[in-house]
Image (cartoon, rainbow, N blue to C red):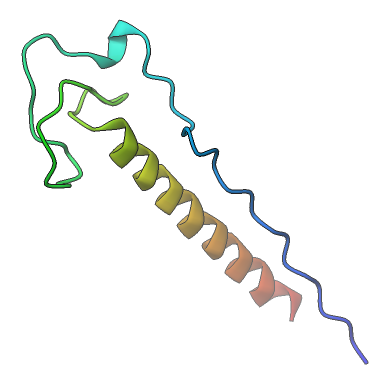
Length: 83
């Protein structure tokens, strides 16, 4: 009987998030703009690394979603070659 490899458990991001926006590089003094992730929340003066308006929480959710998608694509690709 062939043993199937177990899928490694992916770690969850910390509850405080992974981004550090404490420095002034993420703040725009020109005024608040709508979040680039169209969350429907209040406009924000925060800017992401591409200088686009984004809430920290929205940016972290987007990053977490991308990581999940990349991990799933990687696992699917590996499974395809292990059969």
